[in-house]
Length: 326
Ligand code: SF4
Ligand code: SF4
Image 1 (tube, helix red, strand yellow):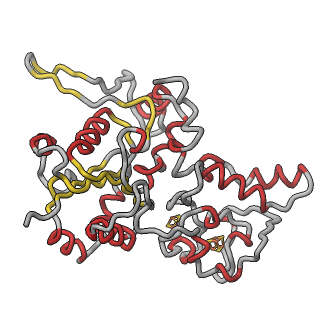
Image 2 (tube, rainbow, N blue to C red):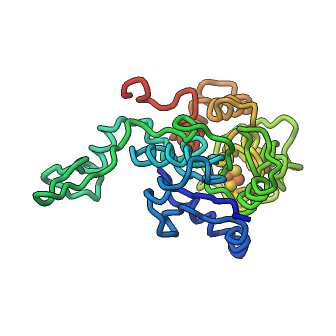
Image 3 (cartoon, rainbow, N blue to C red):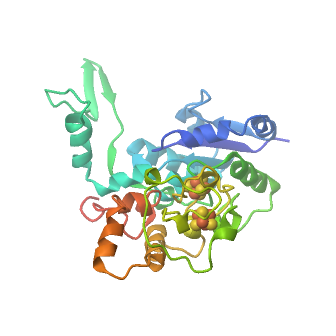
């Protein structure tokens, strides 16, 4: 009997999600025994033309990581959608935009200007920028994909069947998701695979030290304090987003005495992760004067980076430039 075919593809992300697959370690041999990998540009020499030749719907599942930022991403994910029974948004960038999605706070022109002209390490006196088409010889023109006006999560470009959270997904979450998909006992469309349907606090080893009603008097940045590893980080003034973040990672950051930054994203009922995080945080700060509030907010130097670090493109805000371009 033919093995299920799977594809893996990398859009706008750091590459950590590709490493996360390799982090399955010896379990990757089980995966290779159970499925045929028909497309995985980072690891195998298949080309887009090979995917084009496959019958529509013949790939059992495509795992796509990264947000959609280039015309090439858009083209390939639409192709994979056509060729696949299931499309899975793998990792925070694909699911909600992730860290690269914070670039939606800037226009294309602002990004290009900074990257090619203004960044401290750039030496570009002729102000050269990449062109979509460059003629290098009489009959040879090189083409680059277009840099799209803003980054989109996968489900704003193609229909997505399931989500696997994390920045990157842990090997445990990836393996559980693969087992669910191979079991044939598929959960409802749109489900998050491999993680919990409870908040991170539920699995946090410090949860017993978190009072029913948390109130904090002072906000501290991680480098300002040596956190007590036996006490809930939030009660120590660190902005830990565990209460509003989906559990399933095994509380990795907390075990390293670092607050959760929210990479497993929202629970099912939450529409806007950042909005939920801001509202939760506002409900636990115990300030009485404007001066105290100003002082506390001054410790959150980059509110978008703190509360929308992984989810700006999927939020109600989408980004500052969504109504301006495209
Ligand atoms: S707020 Fe953070 S440290 Fe405290 S119990 Fe929740 S996840 Fe753990
Ligand atoms: S603790 Fe939070 S930021 Fe760290 S891996 Fe888990 S969900 Fe992600």
